[in-house]
Image (cartoon, rainbow, N blue to C red; front, side):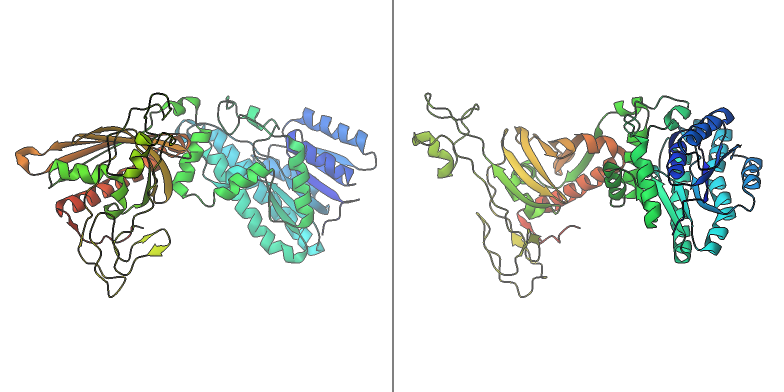
Length: 505
């Protein structure tokens, strides 16, 4: 429990920003104040303003540099044996830029103020609070504490320390009736950005600054409730919580994009090149690669494919889309608009194709016999885990230019369109999923001495996620594409007979 009226509070960094706001709020609650800051002039101005608004309290000032042991000692000497009920550890500053290029002396001062002074003041004042069974410490951390912060490496690490330190003290002191809270605001209009000494308005993080009043209110409310951590602002809460779900490497790269200099955003998209030699004829490889409906039969990362056929153009006085009439197909449904004048167009959707026993496509698991479209039935299996050689279905017509299909490439669903199909040499398609637009081209050529087919693929990715996770996604994209090539080679080299492939991941 915290007693405000007629008790004392210490507020660091009280000459401006959040510190000045906290001092005014505590004065409104009837607390007398010891205010500290580097600028004696601004500190006295803040004290006079508070005195005029709250005549019944005492306001004392200590101009001190908390980056030095003498500055911390000066503040504690002034406090002496006075029973301090509330400590607001607000003083702090940051730096910006690549760590290798920043000023070591400035960053040493930064650690001293943001970390060492916080520890020293808590050491001096917390024992008295515990002995009295009341009081509270509010340590101002930041949302930057929830992930590494490239270009603000020291500041981010310092605030991560404050967050962890506060949580530990909270666990130690809450049983004695003392509250310890870490306040984590996002970028706020306090003078912090100006004190960085460089223009960071171009960064995604510091482009917009929040108001300080909601931050102050959230901090004091959390302290009253005895909460260990409070994140000010709904959007800041969502970002902080999401950081716990993302892989650490990806999270750090995303933060680098958000905090990085403006010129770092002009890098090219992700570009990945893969190559493989497949001991099969180009026509065989082409059939497997371009028959997208059968991808789940050999491509382990592909869960299912659904193909949509574009409208078919027919009689002159009727509108059947804007494209040319596709080649005739054995499918009566696709030819329906060619003779049935009331039928404007037909779009064909193909459901997921069941694969080998013990593999799951969606929520079904095929353990018995079953026929694949255009091919022989599976033999009855004695166990869902058995793998037997199965004949692939007869090849269907490959996907032509303009064919649209939706497919599941674990763990994302993509919308794709074929952009090039030149048998048996070139096959290309685009794929879209939220945050990423990918373009992939396959080029086939006979291998020297007629030993098979060389397949080369180029894939580029652009979009929000591609920009944020360039290095992380690029490495994994290469590995994923190489795994697809290995599956393609296995299927092609078995000359129509392929073993059941265990499900990926």
